[in-house]
Length: 497
Image (cartoon, rainbow, N blue to C red; front, side):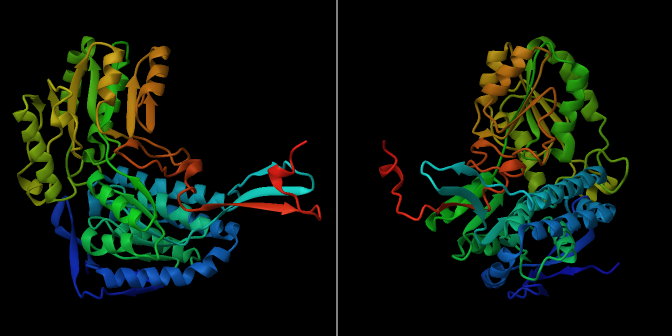
């Protein structure tokens, strides 16, 4: 099969990078499988894409919002029709099993439907005036060109969380997808273009962070930047954006706790922990990486988790029986293996896993065993730092107070969970966990697009994606006052009896 070369999409045309350089992306489960060739873009390519988006903005913002929404709704239909093909593309480029890849596409479909509906909603507010014969209201307006930098772990879902709300508001877009998973962004935009999106409204520039991402963040004609990735890179994006007083939205790391109290349903816990710790090979910002368990049930629960983890079918995500796929690349494999060594060096007990999988087809991919550590204490690095792999650290506690204290004692605050049958404990956790997302009797993964998504502390900078607040990053509020009194009314000065 001929390998496709993906060119940058700039102003409605597919063009090669001005650098003349390209890079390959191979299936992380099978390096013999060449997924595609992509442009290794530089600053000139970013500048061309921003110029195209800037040129398209005046006409796009004047398109009635309901019409903009209709394009998104049509794109949702196209995504649904192509779900199986796009799922295979997604699995090949980043490794997650097909059933998980399908969920990625479904999330984009849902966001297209949700954001598309905002075209007929997009509410402002009206309020009564203090003065007679005066009307007042507020409304949303677009901002301009939005720069987007997206990661590889949810390559279509996260692109949709950013792109579709920005578009329905009337902005234009330049997106740099994660270099390990760019195909899904092309697939999403393919549906938008076929649904009627005008040329230049969305532009795609592929490449690496320093050569393509940083010029996008620094470009003076990009007033809004939306970034998802590591906290280290997010800090740099924030600093660069602040120099030009840009609006910057950051969604970064997590070290998510799942608390198990002594009254929990352990059958339910088992299912939740295994799914949240090892789903997507632990490569989710919401993955459960800390299991904080009451010592009264710790031994029983851990034995069951270890047994289940050892039985997980690890392999190529294209195989229908695969439960856990590979890590995304060799660098990530080395990172995870190095953290496993850190855990052993810190004195944690390796209960299962801990090794790279080798032999047969495993030799052609980046596979690691599902790994469980016990005897973990809160100050250990494996209990504090984001690993982004299938490594679960078990911390035993003796009370709800201790569990909440341990859960909150990290730099991050994205997702959290508690399993308990005590409603009082559940409500305490709901209020006291320092996280943007709290689950009760469910794992730390599974967010839905119609509630806000994001975190606190080092996880983000206060903005939220999805949900009813998703338009806030991509729109400005304008307040409008209409005085039909025929005379000068000096607001509060004349509003005195």
